[in-house]
Amino acid sequence: MAQLIKIDQVELDAIVRKHAMFRSGRIGGARAVLAYHDLSRMNLSGSDLSHADLSGAILYQAKLNDTKLDYAVFYGADLRQANLQNASLVRADMRGVCLRGATLVKADMTGVDLREGSIASTDESGDITRSSDTGDADLSGANLTDARLSGAVAINSNFSDATLKGCKIIRASLQGSNFSGADLEGADLSMCDMRQANMRDAVLVGAMLSLTNLDGADMVGVLTDKPKGQTMADLALPLDEMMRFHTMWVGSNGQIGERMDVSRFDLREAPPFARACLTMMRGVGTIFYGKDFSDVQLQAADLHEADLRHVDFISADLRGSNFSGAHMNNARFQGAQLQPLTLSGGKIMTTDLSGAILRHANFSGASLRQANLRGADLSFANLMGCDVTGADFSEAKLVGAKINQSQLMVGRGEDGVLG
Picture: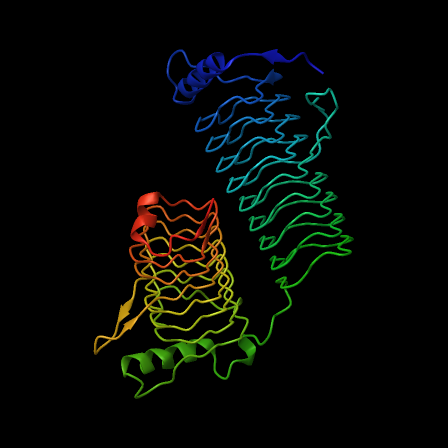
């Protein structure tokens, strides 16, 4: 192994500044070449190190949160216990890296290459780390779309609520890892060792599981290609007809047409619902996973206990609707209206999100004014720029959520669990 180069924080900051100049095409800039450097416990948070060379570098306990590392080369690097929260690692070369105990919550790892590599690093005691070792790493909520993890060792790692669409994870060691709520649509998990893995509520639609060992794995609530309950083919009328009659029912105050009720159906095969009029519809326990509800009219609807994971509610009008107990992980609510709905006669309907699972949901720019979020799980949700005036956060989980103190002060129920 090459001799490690030791530098201090001042020297590192100078290299980062020159790299920024290189990235912007300014005179005097130079690409950051930090291959085989010992950067243990160094602070690189918030920097732009895209295309930097960190081959074989030691980044033990380094601060890389909010750092841009797109297309960077980490071949054989040691990233044990590093903080990569919110980092961007798009198409980074991470073959042979060691990520044991690292934090990659909400990291964007689209197209990252985590296959086996040949460089081995030494830890502080001189022990050789295993190549492609992500054991005990926290990748919860990370975006690993199209990432390549073939041959990776990720024993007991946390992939909960992560997006792993189209991932190639062939022959990986994933024993005891947590994939609860993870989206593995179209992923290739062939020949993986996933014994005792937690797959509860994971999405395995279109996933390849040839010769995969899932002995002892928790498969409760897993969403596969097999329908869960009745499908569109079992509806009393074609869905477009039901929606047309529903629009007539809403427009006539119930005089003509018929209210749309698709409760307990699996509607994953339905066309997008964007810009539709679905006011007062019923979809109790319905599976809407991944559907497009952007700009929809969905006031006073009953969707409690529905599966709304990865649903797009951007700019939707959801006032007064019941989402209690719904699964809404990674849903997008940017610009959505979830404040109370005022009916004729002055009656007020509060938007009910009590007990809903909203981990990693995005509420930026939305209105949650006076919404009922009692007992909801908002872990790692983005609430920045969201109006939460009068919202009830009693017993809600806000661990890792992006929310500032001034927002909580205008909300109600300050006994929420904060991280």
